[in-house]
Length: 436
Ligand code: NAD
Image (cartoon, rainbow, N blue to C red; front, top):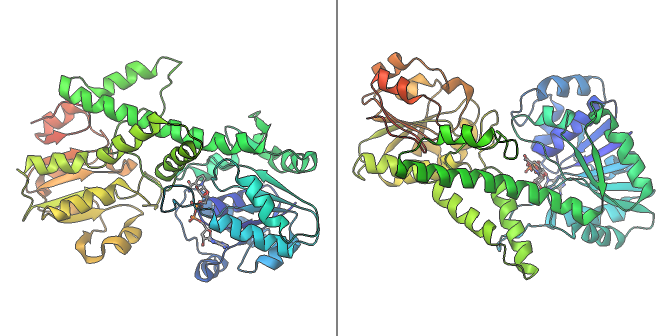
């Protein structure tokens, strides 16, 4: 099949590359000239495990192209995916200007039947708006399909190639059969393709993300309470999660959810609720609790040093909003670093992939260190913010040697309390007793 993907970011690039991997011809479009230039030169603009190999294979085989020329890409494609940004607008609702802007362009340029697939996360009712935008100028038949994307950054390629399920919202039989043909290779193990109406598909994505954000937030509150009552949230998590009605995944407490999706999607669903005269109370609490949770680690550090961080050297391990990505959008590290800087600390940071992106925000205000141990030299404390695997089994003796004070604040509960006692660290984590 011939496919155009408009918007070559995390979702567009991964989707486009994976569609090429199953033998389709894919033309990825982006209006960022530099990005397209880099991609054409074989350079990936994002870090995503497993992407490089298939990107290389498919570009070299000529199945995957990159362009800034929307007209040319659309003329050559039968199915056009929109993987455009839907950032929060000023009032918290999803900003549809990118999606609707391109939809209007499409109306002007399509000359034969196309399936226009919305892969961006968009509020209920958007497929009707996209249809209206295309219809303004279109002189030919087209169908608009809602196909929300559930990939997770960090495991995006794996998620895309073997999705738990594919959700497709359409009322057109013609579009349905094309979408079925396109996705069949991805569900060969028997995972389902769910066909539904457009509105339900749009809602499914928001409901899924908001539920996951709620689950994390619930565990963060349990963790905060565990600290107060002397329980250990890791024991509680295991005890809870082995109930099959609950399940083990996504129960890890931490420093609050971040990323480019959960914060904006929870906010946008809340906005949709408000616009429809529905008071979605849980979502309001989720947002409020999460905003507070982002500061928990910084507050612990401040209170340990009697609220005076002047002259203190705080090392940060982990900047990305989660491991295996270089994405720092809404990353808790940003909030934590800001709080520490404001309190007068000297912040030195290490992350395996996200330092360049973080430099663009903090510049010289933060010292970025190439090697994880070097960040610990003369540090008064270490704060662990992202659970990269490389932080899980470090050389604690060496760490103790390097640090000025043997103090760890762990926002991800990477280490065992016993272990920390043994190595003589002060160790303050989330929802567990402090080792002093
Ligand atoms: P992104 O910001 O990484 O990528 C968007 C791309 O669109 C950018 O490269 C930008 O240059 C390009 N673009 C903007 N306007 C354009 C135009 N007029 N023509 C061509 N290209 C244009 O965003 P993303 O993270 O890939 O997210 C895209 C959508 O997918 C959002 O709605 C998001 O909520 C949703 N989503 C994201 C994820 C994720 O993990 N990132 C997962 C599921 C769904």
